[in-house]
Image (cartoon, rainbow, N blue to C red):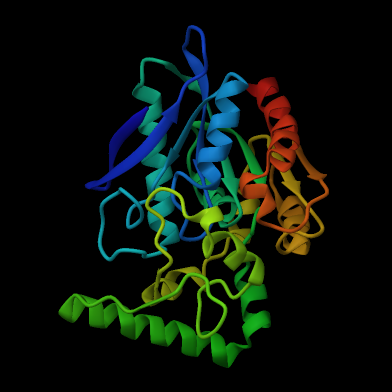
Length: 291
């Protein structure tokens, strides 16, 4: 069912999938990859979770899809964390949901962002990640080099200031085969740049000012503060498996596990049932012990 709720004064639109039978149900709030919308990866996981007895909420973060907020296509980790917390409030007040049994799942970049919400919000009783990209400020600096990183952040700041002055939003493609793009991976283009990922209100654009927030974002800094049970699913062929190991090792929780599955790469975790179902086998088994 289509639902709406407010997050810091902005309207957020989601899709709440309920299991068959009588509630109240345990619930999962989902957060997906960079620039994604609710009909893509999180929609696939929500549908599968509902079949397993969990109410599941996928939503368009503010600035994306059907949700409000300006500028459009603005990737802001802090805003996404706030949107997750607003989603928890919505779920906690829903008559079909058991407010004492709320959990969270993040896919790709959504896992790294969700870490910030899990660390801050005691309403989340367990945390699952799928092919998570766990942003590391230190590693970002190593990958790019200090000069290029600082130049990119400075350019993003200039873009933000221009938007604040005249309302014009400088964007680049989220994916593409040439030129400057937000996700310069052939695999990303195979999903977002083709019919495979053209779902819902997806727009292949990325507000350049986003890099002021995304480049220094540090999911690793939240790991030690996470004390609830955590179950991670990853693949050696998915994005940054070394960061997944580091995040797992840094977690403050004593109840944690990381499961390594076979995959073609990263994006088959977004929509391939042969990846989604075994990932959720691990996650829902762990969640049921808690909720």
